[in-house]
Length: 451
Ligand code: NDP
Figure 1 (cartoon, protein in one colour):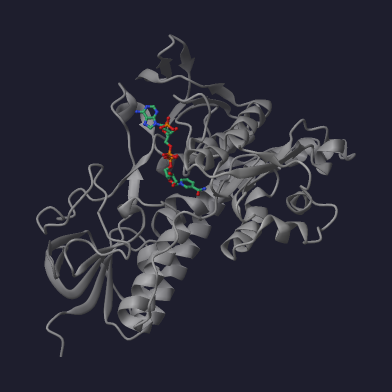
Figure 2 (tube, protein in one colour):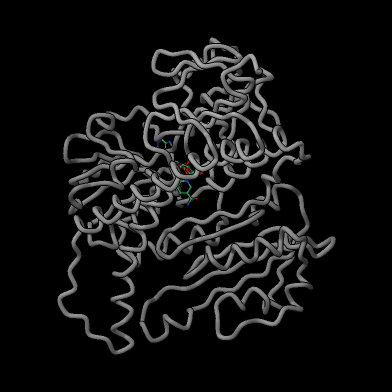
């Protein structure tokens, strides 16, 4: 008999924690998951899933407008926000149930309440101490508000924005990151007058400059009011005052100014776990903290904050520890991601600026064109594609796209890049015609060398 109550206690029932726990249990470990809320975590309950459902809902507005060019007359189109939010809530209930079923089927115990680490092998939940040979911290992150006058009092976070009973007529969104840009598309699509206020000259820092500029143009064309190089000085009830003196009247203020790891009050300082300045748990390449029996995965480690990364980290952890498998650390440098803006943007690998910074000699292939759908629809919006090719061996080290279906297309490109595809491999691939994706295999003569 083990001296502990469990082999593994996972704190956090989100995508990463649930994956690690059920795989570990399937491999014979006795596992408990501690969760305060329903199962599902940020992605399922407050992030990816509700966001994408609302993006789908909002994108019909663009489709209706495009349809007219194809001969449709759509009279009296009307949107019922309450009906959409109710349908979304029903779907989230279903998914939380699916997560519960996954753990039940795997024989994982769910301990309801807030988990606090007491020492290297103990966790307190609702006043009771449970012990485990190992502890996995998968508590994720939460929206963060910097110190801006009135924001804490009047602002809402993405948590609330994805679950409003009524749609605001006007919204000011602070920030220019993933969440700000995605939710700007959602609200603008449904007809809310939308302002996007961000301190940089462009949205989406870290993405390829060409895509960032293209997206800014597209957002503006779709009626979003952009306020670059601007910060809010004060939020005063229904008014946001900007540092350039402009005052924006609004029904709602959404702060999308970044997220922070959820480590406050988790008992980590007492347990001697090393944290970074922003509260992230410091782990080695395989997720182990400085306390040998305690591991961490996902957003709480603030490495690459994406659900599939947390899931991969959880799966690797479980297979390594309980399945005796050798698992290398993930290649964090080459992970595809998408921004579900309208139009969407997706990307993998190095940007042109990253390549220059790394001193890589590269050839840049790019294409910018009006997709066929937009010829008749009349929508003045281009799709943009870019490949970054290492000159030394022709390997594709970056791929970027802005436009219809970009996330679906880049997912396929990501497989090719994971397999080490070269530009010659892309050239040898016969395209599917007529598609936008075929541009990735027909960009022959536009190579521009970085040096
Ligand atoms: P991001 O870090 O992407 O963006 C934060 C934004 O807030 C940036 O524009 C940043 O500006 C700005 N900002 C931060 N502090 C201040 C300040 N004090 N004053 C003014 N502006 C400020 O955060 P998000 O909240 O949008 O998203 C968090 C994370 O969640 C992302 O990094 C991503 O990993 C994940 N996510 C992924 C999604 C996906 O994959 N589709 C969707 C949503 C979230 P600047 O750039 O100048 O620093």
